[in-house]
View 1: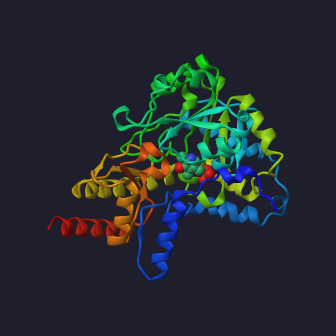
View 2: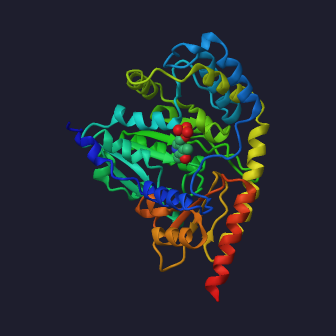
Length: 390
Ligand SMILES: *Cc1c(COP(=O)(O)O)cnc(C)c1O
């Protein structure tokens, strides 16, 4: 058989190699404390699961769902945006439920990118932005996110010939992996840039609800002209600890929403309806569970950031997201440092370079592990540091 050339472009994911090493050690009986994966350890709140179980028993929810999602779900998404961000959305034209936001993030590339086209992609960044661009036959142009610029891309530094040719601009705040946040002033700048260069913006925003010390991250949609130039991806995964149920959404520009709908309706048949009903429950229900989760993450963040600084890594306290992006000491690459930690302490973290070359010099630690495991990890890091110092 002859596989497509497209598949040759899928270079092996660095994380696959690291996961292999972790699995190997675990098979030998090593107890690995993993800060490597951004997947909430706390279960989906009870009231959401109760609704899911109830819907699962209803034969009406056993049949093919509509690709466009239940009207009640689109309505619930629009109402949630209104309550949370003060943004009014037309649930029929400006809202599209997704099988997890990753599904839409991957598919939107095919609505914009023809062979040879360019998408502007943050580096470091969630790998799907660049991989979907490549799969669609296009080329990612990487915008470095550096600490001196608070991990915001310098749009003015993009060469004119690139910005003229680019069709999509990818942004992601609160940011994975850096934990950085963006204000409305930055989103406003991005809209001006999109207008000037006739490109569309995709803002990936799954972490707006994971935030600390009372900070409330804004939505890109709060910029008055945003819906003329872009869409925002959001998700129930991180907000309601629903990663395993696969449900998210795209909102904003009606033409982009329609394009995404037309593309995906040829590939999938929507989100299982019981999961849509659980999502409605989550969106319409009390936001108390979100606040409870944030209290837990904030406590973990404070403990871990302190420990990292104590052992000579430079870690800022993120205002949002459940990641700590820590600067590693000179003399190591991020892969060397990650390997050393794993071999000497059985603590797993992710090397910054796995998110792009501008991530070199950093590691990412996720706060999604139980407190007692987090404390065990911290203990090992402190012991390792002490032993090295002597
Ligand atoms: C977790 C994550 C997603 C994917 O979320 P799903 O809705 O579960 O597909 C998208 N973007 C970023 C940056 C993420 O960290």
